[in-house]
Length: 76
Ligand SMILES: [Zn+2]
Image (cartoon, rainbow, N blue to C red; front, side, top):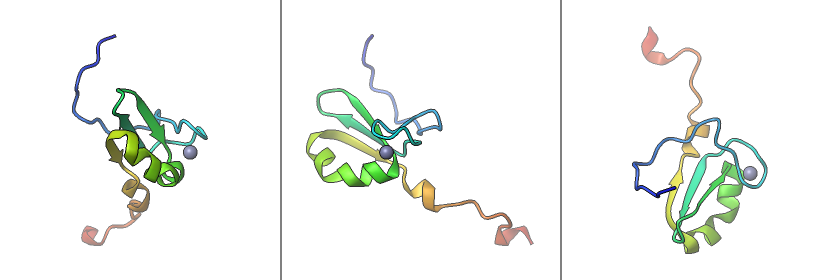
């Protein structure tokens, strides 16, 4: 398998936290070339450690807080 630099793709429901199996919201590309996935909880928990070994951290945890409103204001 060849490693190709691809544009960061959004995390999906199929991406699971390496620690607990919950849906992943944080993708960590390691300096060593590997990749780790974490849920928001574990992403935050390991963030200080991950920053030391990560080439890139893709953080999509803000998607958790932007819960789609059932009736948007502009729908009037
Ligand atoms: Zn987790």
